[in-house]
Length: 205
Image (tube, rainbow, N blue to C red; front, side, top):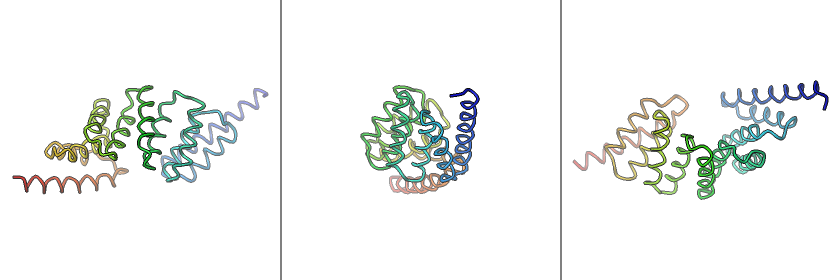
């Protein structure tokens, strides 16, 4: 390919990828998907674009297609830890928890300092009612990033299910204090859990 043509193609790929990123951050997932698909028409060999596309599909609830997109990302770049973690999230959303755990383990083997992967693994374990293991994963996430709000919420949930009510209340209160606006739904759930915990503690006094 002529060098000038190649540079033009790369510029277009970058344009569509950045456009997809912009619309994804705005929560406009259909526009983001359109943009990533345009980028992939020009370049099908970049793992990151397939990974981004998978995240958008997962956000739209199209988990089967998302998983396919992550699989392509990993075929192109087997050590893409982010794609492993994102595929785990998509698999967990369809209740394929054991497969999801395998993905999170792959991600963490590649990048042990990924607090989001530890948090995602903890969330899957919560769904499997494996609360002690979930708690350890949330602790590892918070050791790396003490202000990871999702990990705080997860830790509070795990402690509540383990009957460690006072600790759970303290963690949930911290989560509520730092939760960003985009986690408003989690904040509401945390308030409901906190009220439930306080009622239990009052009955036990």
